[in-house]
Length: 465
Picture 1 (cartoon, one colour):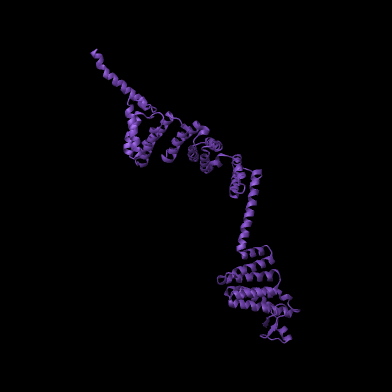
Picture 2 (cartoon, one colour):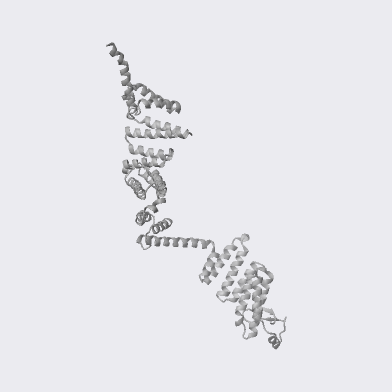
């Protein structure tokens, strides 16, 4: 009997050790399951109080004890798992040693797994786990991919919205680095969008969050869509977007180019419709912008009218431009005004054959911008061009040429910039000066002055060939 009792303490100790060892492996153990319930509850209360006071070191010590004795706490509230993750995340963020960071990260993930095993809300917890792995722990993508797959396989349409954006990033990275097949990437792409769309349409509580997630992951997935899908996919994707906002011509341009790039024919009804609509909108917008620009810049409008051959309208616009510039008073740019006058002179003389009026505007330009040779070059051109119809005989024509040469000479004398052009024209028209025999027959000597007939009406000094 004595011998039997001598073994009893050892037997009790053995079974107690066995019980503790067995329960140490049970992450769902509650403090009501523990022979040290009072101690477990006390540790829980103390760590929660220290945590409330932000004394994290003391809180962690008591949390370790509370967790060791009863990982699931009272079985109603998963405080030990949640707070444990917070402790380890704080330590992870403050640690520089990579080995320790890896250990803390493993503890965080383990606590997620334990809570999912012992409490409900697996979809929510999977979403939080993915979030931490992707944003906080920077878990390796192969490891993260396993969790993402598990989250979607288990959750289906109930998969947390926090899973979707990380999955999109991992998909793109893995596919680009040839670590995911085209088929898997394509099916994952479809699944992510299906989950988002289902919840946007049906999840009244979190639908907005799924929409926000989709808004973020859509441009991420767009990086590889061209390698995963054909024309039909992009037509299906873009048509509702186009129908929803048929005035967004920038988006329309992108849709059109992308569909053509993915093999859609330009004769496809949707492709053709988008192109036509885009061109209509852009034409209208450009017209409105141009009209607004012309209101502020009548000189540019006048030049455009000139280029269109609308010479009379161009003259009126140049007049408006002159008035607008002159309205600035002392700040008016006289060179700009002179340029407008010159433009009017050019139109009147070269396009409308209104020579006298052209000369008047050319002289206005010359007075507005002194020492500018171009107005006189223009007058010379008008004299030369009309010389063959000036007067009734050859002598009159030749005298008109002298008037042109005088204008070229004067332009050259005041403006070196026109010297080369003036010399070339003087040389050209000098061949058409009157001959001395003509002057002799009329009693006109070199150096004498004579009035040019026709509209020119100027007095010139006679010189012969």
